[in-house]
Amino acid sequence: MKRFLTLLIIVLPLFYSFKQANIQADTTRTWVYQNPEIVSDLAPYDAALAASDLDRYRYFDHRNIIHFENGLNVELMSANELTALGITYKANHIRTHEPQFNTGSVFKLAQNGHLVEVMTKIKVK
Image (cartoon, rainbow, N blue to C red; front, side, top):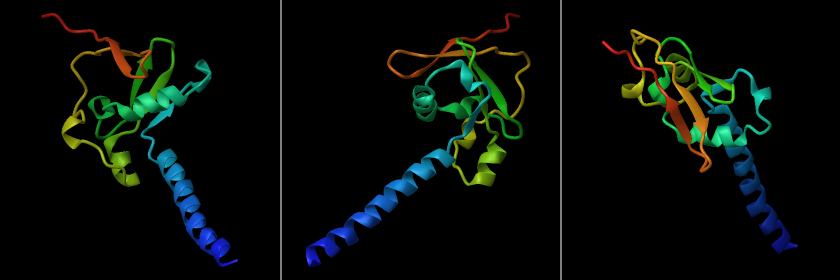
């Protein structure tokens, strides 16, 4: 009986901590899918977006939308929203103003699970 109680005392806190870690992982997502019905499985996109430096495409005071080749649109939360939620970000990577022209970046999910920017328009002077 003592072994059972000891095991129970050890296992329950571990189970609770894993459950809390999963809840925290869901609440720290810094993007919103606008049309998730486009893809059948969002898990690879979640993993790729979580591993990427999305702060390069994020603005301080308003949301930005990034587009994928397959039509999926992902709305990035603003830096101010992340601050309000207590989520850390790289402040020196955040965009401070709109570009003079629309860069029109298009992304895709590579076979290795990484996020790849496949097209960026540039302005020729």
